[in-house]
Length: 232
Ligand code: APR
Image (cartoon, rainbow, N blue to C red; front, side, top):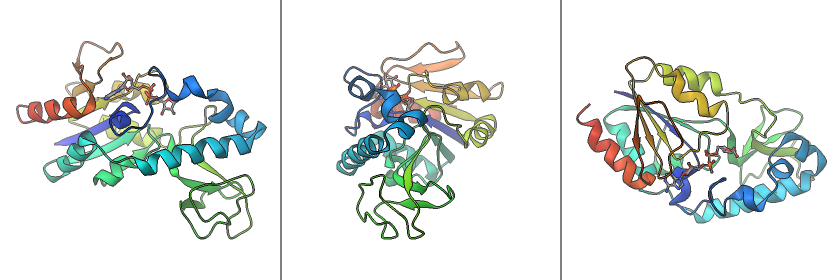
C-alpha cells in the first residue's frame, strides 16, 4: 500500500526535541520573528545562526524514537513516503529512505549567492568546519552561507511535490502537528476521496470527521496505527 506520513514536531518530542507550541515550547523562549523569519535574518543574522547552532547541538544529543523506527520498518512491507515539517534528521537516522522536508534541514546550510549549493554539516568545504556557523562562515567559493531553513515569509518549495504524494496515497497518517502553519496544515485536504486518513496527536487539533484520530503520543499511536493497518 502507498502510505504517506505527514509529521510535525510532536513525532520528535519523545526524542527530547522541544516542540514549538507546547508549554515551554521553542516559541515561548525565542521571538519567532527574530530567529525564524526572513526579516529577522536580514536584521540580525548572527542571532539566527546562533539559534540554529543551539538546535543542532540539541539534535546531536537526540536519537530517533520508537515512532520514527516503526515508520522506517514499515518500508519493508509498504511504499512509505515521509513528508515532514521537521528540520531534524531523525526520520533519516531511523532508516526512512524517502523523506521530503517542507521547512528545510537543520544539519544543512546553503550558499547565499548560489542557493543550489547545499552543505551537510559538519563540512570541510566551509571555513567553520564544525556544526556551528556564523555570518562570517564562507564556503570554498568565498560566499556566505545561511541555514537551509524555510523562514517564515519564505516560499515552501517542496509543497507541490508533497500534495502530489498525498493525492496519490492509499493511506495518510498525520503525526504530531498542531495544524496551524500553512500550507503544511492543509496537506490532508489533498487526500483522494476514499483514502484512509489518520491523525496521531495526544492533544489533537480539530480535524474533519472523516479523519480517524488516535489521541496518543506518537510512539503509542504509531504502534496502534500499524495494528489497524493489517485490518485495512
Ligand atoms: N507525540 C505526538 N504528538 C505530540 C507529542 C508526542 N509525544 N507531544 C506533543 N505533540 C503534539 C502537540 O499536541 C502538538 O499538536 O505535537 C504538536 C506540536 O505542535 P507544534 O509545536 O505547533 O509543531 P508543528 O505543528 O510541527 O509546527 C509547525 O511551525 O514554527 C513552525 O516551522 C515550524 O515546522 C514548524 C511548524
